[in-house]
Image (tube, rainbow, N blue to C red; front, side, top):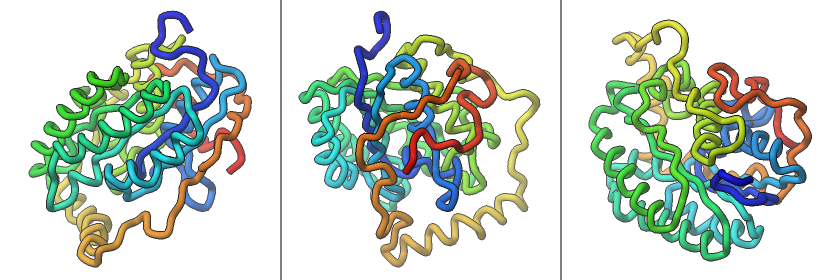
Length: 282
C-alpha cells in the first residue's frame, strides 16, 4: 500500500478496554461490533485474506492491558495492531499520567520490536460530553500529551480525535456517555483509517453532524447520574469492575469475512454501516 502507514497486512490484533471491545455498538446478546471490528472491515477491502483478533476486555486499566493482553498479542505475531487504553485509569481517584503512559510505552515497544505497525488515538475531553466530569479535563489533556510522546518514540500512528468538536456531539455517544454509539464507533474507525492513509479515507469523519446537537439538561444530568454514574461508583467502592470474569470476545485470529462494497471511511453517516454485523463468526 504505497503512500500509507501500512505495508502488506495479514494479521491485525486489537488491544484495549471497553471501547475497543465495542461497548455501545450492539450488545452482549446480539454481539458487539465496535470501531476495531469496523476498521478490520475497512482494512480487509485492501488486504484480502486479513485475519483479525480482538483481545480487548471492558474495565481494563492500562497496566492490565499490558499484563493480560500483550503476551497473547505477541504470540499472534501481528503485522498491525491497535492499542487504546487509559480512560479507565483517569477515572480512578488515583491517576498518574506518567505511569499510564509507561504501560502504553512498554506495549508499543514490545510490538514494534517484533515488527508490528501500531495505531492509537487521543481522547476527547469528557467534560465536553458531561459537565459533571469537568474535573477530569486536566487528566485527559495530560494523558493525551503522554500518548503523543510515547507514539513519537516508537513510530506509532496517532488518530488525533481529541480536539475536533464533533467528537463531543451527544449523538456519537451512547446513553452512558462513556462509550461511543454505533455512529461514534464508525467515526473512530474512519479516523484511524484516515490516520493510516487507507485508500478511500479522508478527513470527513471530523465533519459536524447535520443539525444542532441536543445538549444535556439539568434533569438529564440527574437521570444520567442516577442511572449510570451511581452504579459505576458503587462498583468502584466494592472493588468490582464491569470486566470481572470476562475474557476477550475474539482471542484468536479469524478471517474477516467478505462484506461486499464498503462505503468510503470518511462518509459522514454510517461509515461502514450501523447494522451491528460482526466481521466474522464469534
